[in-house]
Amino acid sequence: MQNIRAFFLALSAVAVIALVTVLTASVTIAFAGMLMIFTALRLLSARLKPVPVRTGNGKTKELRIWNDGRGTIIDL
Image 1 (cartoon, rainbow, N blue to C red):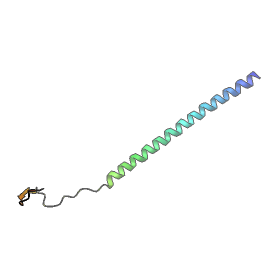
Image 2 (image 1 turned 180 degrees about the vertical axis):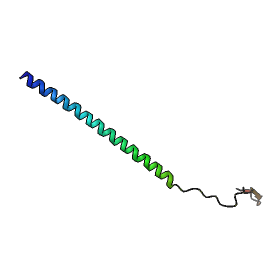
Image 3 (image 1 turned 90 degrees about the horizontal axis):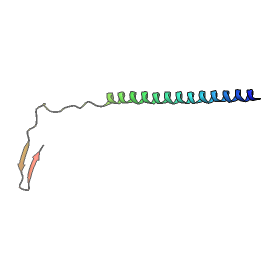
Image 4 (image 1 turned 180 degrees about the horizontal axis):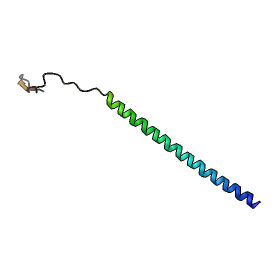
């Protein structure tokens, strides 16, 4: 009777260790998958951002300042 009890206790311990190992592996794989998806989305979103287009002739605009009688106006 002692041998059977020890056998089932050892068998249940091995089963618990195997269950914990499988759970750890599945959580690790799920985390790696989410990390891979987030990285791919980040790379794709960087490519989809519009490139800024400059308007005008490329020269700097001159700063216009005038006074209309009510205050000084600075046109940037």
